[in-house]
Amino acid sequence: MRQLKHTRATKEYVEKFSTLVLVVLRIDEEDKLHYFMEGL
Image 1 (cartoon, helix red, strand yellow):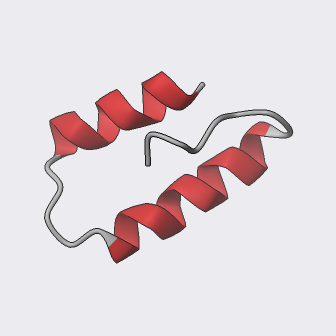
Image 2: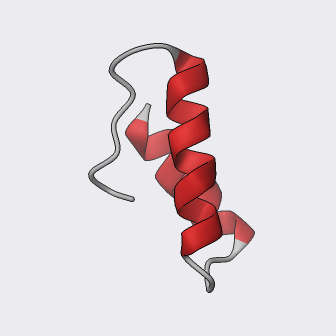
């Protein structure tokens, strides 16, 4: 997740991030927000 960076369309970033969140089974909401914001 830390390697995912917003470099193109925001929609593309959100889609990729959402896919990663589905793969990572144990992640709480606070961490999701942190990683999402870090990648922007």
